Amino acid sequence: MHMFDVAAIKQQFPIFDHHPDLVYLDNAATTQKPRAVLDAERFYYEHHNANVHRGAHRLAVAATDAFEGARATVARFINAATSDEIIFTRGTTEAINLIANTFGESLLAGDEIIVSTLEHHANIVPWQMLAQRTGVIVRQLNITPDGEIDMEHLHELLQSSRARLLAISHASNAIGSIQDIQSICDLSHQKQCKVLVDGAQAIAHLPVDVQALGCDFYVFSGHKAYGPTGIGVAYIEQSLLRDLPPWQGGGEMIDVVSFAGTTYAAAPQRLEAGTPAIAQAVGLGAALDWLATLDRSALLQHETQLHHQLKQGLESIEGIKIHGHAKNTVSLSSMTFAGAHPYDVAQFLDNKGIAVRVGHHCAQPLILTMGIQGTLRASLAIYNTQHDVALLLSTLAETLDLL
Figure (tube, rainbow, N blue to C red):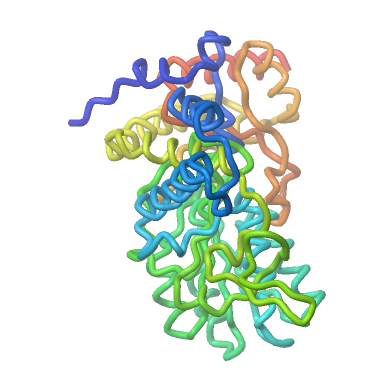
């Protein structure tokens, strides 16, 4: 049996030095940062700060090495075939918009993009905007009452000869359900339909091997995987990447510029206009390197045990309804309360130093499908403890007695 020293892990996160009583259960929104990430960004600024790819001086060379080293780290972490398949973005949202504005622009009026009901707004709205511009059609993929993809409905939608792209989350940010991405990719590719996977909620919890999954695009944010804000990744399979046009113009993405015409750099630079988020990329590389040093199976076991404790406790408290009952989930629970608004409950929790999230979690179509206005979401991470979960449960029980 794996042993996981959560106390030793928690000591690596300075925020808990400043807030020793904090019970942080809003990890699906953003995770806290380990000292290794903070140190890496500070070291970059103190030792290597310069612009990348352009300079001839030693600082520029060191900065470029650090930046491109981070790209190689990301490629290793998700098992991309080459680091050129890794495009740095500001986050998952920009990564999806990048793909909508490059691959999406190659689609024709009447072509179809399948988008699941589970999706975050960032994996819905860019496709709707593309549809308004180009006449492509967005098809909604249904879910089961348990919050899983309706595979029969997916099979039906894929019968259309115009299905060109399936946009789907690896794990739902609102109810946690994990999708069988490998099977979904196999089914979609049989119909020549590409697959974009939103991995924002999966990357910190699950092993991700883009080659084994078989997806064409995989996107995620650094800040949900113990890394900095302002940095994300679009993995684009190299055969697709070669033909993608630039989506922003400026420095870095060019080959030759003249008023007679401009030629563009090869990928990944072609899709990274302007000065990139260098320090943030270095920080993301440090976060993934740090995660890779841990026993990932023990980490997953730790989170699974905490989530089991949470679910059992919630089921024992009268007046709580849990939403989403997929067989496989990441470590979050979404709930509503009989006779109490989630926001009021969250205020009581905050008074006890317990941080949770309330609302529609940027997943309004899913929330409306479930027939509710919003939920209270508690999401777990590597540094959470059995005490954190027990305090949440006891405070919820006390709060519901009061309200």
